[in-house]
Image (cartoon, rainbow, N blue to C red; front, top):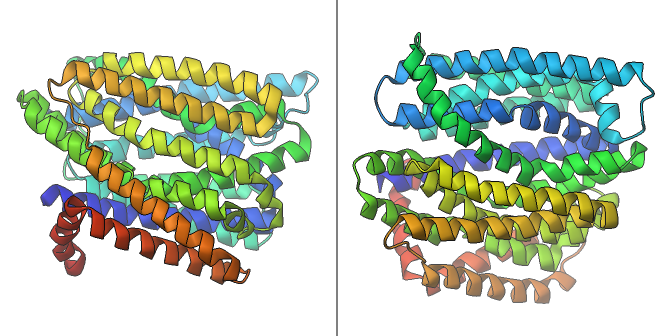
Amino acid sequence: MRLGKTALYHFGTQVVISVSGFLATFAIGVFGGSADLGNYTLAVAVGFFWLAIPISGVAQAVNKRMSEGADPGQYFGGGLALNGVLVVCLTAVVSLTSWLLQVVETPNQTIVRVIVEYDVEIVILLVGAAAIKTVLFGLQGQKRVARAGALRALDRVVRSGSQVALILLGFGVAAITLGHAASLLFVSIVAIVLAPIRPSVPRLEHLRGLGEYAKYAWVGALRSRVYGWLDTLVLGIFLTGTTGASLIGIYEVAWGIGSLLATASASISSTLFPEMSDLSSDGDYDRVAHFLDEALAFSGVIVLPGLVGAITIGERILRFYSGEYVRGYVVLVILVGAYTADVYANQLLNTVNAVDRPDASMRVNAVFILVNVVLNVVLVWQFSWVGAAVATAVSASVRTAGGGIVVHSILEEAPLPIRPIGSQVVASIAMGGAIVLLAPSVPAGRLWTISLVGAGATIYFTVLIALSGRFRTKVQSLVPAVVSV
């Protein structure tokens, strides 16, 4: 019950994050245009995600070491110190790269233009990324998952509010990127103030302990960047000019819709990691298997109907932004399919990391990265943005299969909750059939589209509650938590 409430609260904050992110993306995409959205997306991909891969590895090590209970303050301080050093080194890399690109003949690739024009903004974004990743992972390591989720929501609300205001006032990519960085730094300061355990001066053994875990965990961070941002990076390399930036902007809208559908799975994994880590330290692998069963049973509860919805009314959902985004329909369907595979892979490998087997997780992620890189380069070269989406979906499926194999090798009785997942599939198909019948009679327009989505969700959850006793029990157990909010 306690973990269910924590996951519910975390999910609530993820909904706030997703809605705020949608509003910002909508404002940038509609008022700034798909080209501005594409350029901003590439700046974020470089500054907040790709360059921050080693920073994320250290932050994950902070989460793991603090969750073990010994010397949490020293590990917290050690993580901040290590990431501070990384920021200095990466700032030098960005500055040198931008200078070299300016002194040579600059090609017209979209990614090159972004690095040259927004190098200062990328560096400031990197500083904010290091601060917030370390601090929020530190909170999760203290089993303050709900608080970390609330602070992520605060970051997104502050960021989105500032970006919407800036874009409405006529500012461009540089301003909204700096607004992003400012919100990260602000929330990092708030998080330090609210943390029950404050950072303290680490000793050499604490730095070594972080390094031992981070040397594997960074591959997991690389995995998430490859999954979420390699396609964007490769598109930025192969596409050129304003047209390329526009296609990247439309691709980002489709990707954002897919990520919205994965919020429940993210909340479950964030909630269960410190618990499973604690149990594995005590050798209680039966309870670890129980938590994995719960995670797999409920991870697809939103993304499965989302996939059916993307297939049936995906064009209408994209038209919600504007008519130019409708051409991303095929990309939308493929990317939501990729997220469907990825939510289960995340739970499997989250368990592997929790039982302190980052080496096994690294092997799976290494295969995923290899497949994703090769497919992205080849398929984007041949089929442009549809190829990028296909590469992402195929590699996500490979990762899910690899995660299942590794979990079965570690846990004697690895769970596979077929009935709960089957109930979600049946309910999703029922919802899809109803939407196909309803959609032709529903007028065009944003409010009508929202109403159609709401009707589909109502049908889905009604059928699911009727089919799944396990889901009914879970809902009944969480009702008091919802009422008390």
